[in-house]
Structures are given as C-alpha cells and as structure tokens.
Image (cartoon, rainbow, N blue to C red):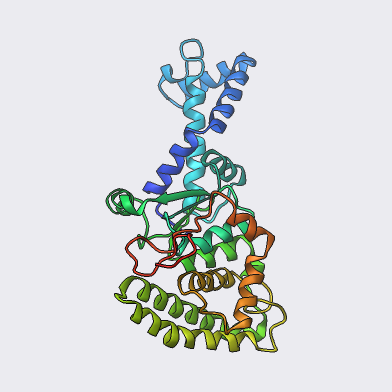
Length: 334
C-alpha cells in the first residue's frame, strides 16, 4: 500500500492537535469516563490484562488511583492513529473527518489579500457550492509581513503563494487560483467540472485564453505609468481579447448562456475577469453585447448575488494600492 503523504508529517500532527482540542473529542472522552464509572468488573478485568498479560505499567491503568487516565490515553492514541491512516493512506473515516471539520469551523480555509483580485472567483465558487462557512483568512496588504514573514514559509505548501486553499477533510493544500477551482469542482460539484463532448477539445484552450487576458490586465494595472499607456492597451490589446471572446459567445453549439453552455467552474474566473475590466477600464465592453449579457447572467445568479452581499466577499479595491490602475468602489478608476 503506497503512502499518499508521509505517515508522520507536520500537517498530520496539526490535525491530531486540532482534534484533541475540539469539543467533540472531550464529549467522547466524557462518555467513556461515564462508561468507566458503571461496569466496574469490566474495568478491573482490563486492568488485570494490561498489568499481568501485556506487561504494561500498572500505574497507567490502576482504576482506583487514576480512574480516567487510561481512557484519556487510549482515546487520544486511537483517534490519532485513525487520523494518521486517513491522511497517509487512501482511507476515509467519515466520522473522524466530520469531527475535525466541525472543530475547525468549516471544511475549507481560503487565504488571500484584502483585495478582490484573484480571490473573488474562489470566494464565489465556495459560496455557490454551499461551503459558506469556509474560513476566510485575509492578509492586509499594508501588513504584508504576516504572509511573507510568518505564514508563507511555514504552511507546508508545495508552491507557497496567494490565494491558497486548505481542505480540512482530505488534507489537500493548494495554491494557484485555477488549480483551486479545478479541485473544488472535481471534488464538490462535479457537474461544474465536466463539459459537453463537443467542447472538450477546446476547454483547455479557452482556459489558456483567460489566463492570457488576466496576465495582460494585471500587467497594465501594475506596470503602466501614464494614462496614454492605459488608453493604448484598452483600444489595442484588450479590445482584441474582447473581440475574440465575443465571437466565442456567438457559437451556435453553445446550449446555454455560459462558456460551454451550462455553468462551468471556468465561468467563475472569466466572468470575474470581465467584471474587473468593466470596473478598471470604464466603458471597455460597451461594443460587446454578448460579453455584457454573459456578465449580467453570471452575476444575476442568486447564489452570486448573495455572496457579493456577504462579509466573505471583498468587492473593492480590485487591485492592491500599489497598482496604477485600480477601482476603490467610489465609481472612479484610478
């Protein structure tokens, strides 16, 4: 049997500590102590077994001197072993997973800056799939040392970056916004992961086109120096991107209002990117009715509207304060 992750690892030990400190562990412990108080013959029988046959230290299991110590040690070791097996092997103990998740407040933990940026699409996706109680770890851009100096080197991430996602049920830790959406869709809402057969050859292509658009918008937002540079981008490179997507939305094969007809996880990223463009470059989509309709349809979904009004979503600013092009929510772009 192959190990998925090392049997003894920082993340596994962290999970054990989470469980041991949870109220659910102590409820189980209390139940066992109550059990100990009732069937005395059984407890004395176990004491004799441990002391005489298994040669374990007597004082650990003396029912008169330490009435609950045995149960504390036994429960902690037992559930710790199950957690290690769950994290290291392809084994799932559902009741253990539920207990650990409940003790942490939610299955998922999302970390990102206190801006809209790349975090918005994941926050909306988590809300849409019903994971509304996710832990929303927000790092203040003005206090960047909390991320760079404290958390980034110590979280056990393969490629430390923001946003990050922790799945407290499976132990998976991810960075890269698209990888996070891939994982969430595949794991929690598989209908948002698949595409019709006729669009399967094009899915990765469209995803790459979104990545190129995002990089271009980020680059001009943070690296431009003058209004003339921004205007040239809007009338040149950005317009070309929008023209190509406008043609894509005109495809007759699409049986629905979204990228591949039905809603897909990539819609959360692309619709959010178009919204960024509308906020940052006023009027940039006015000549593209299909894109405007697409954005309106997506942000008109009940779950998305609810998310935007929640305290989990950060609408403004779109970029960090160091960006030349930004939108602070005042109605004006910087």
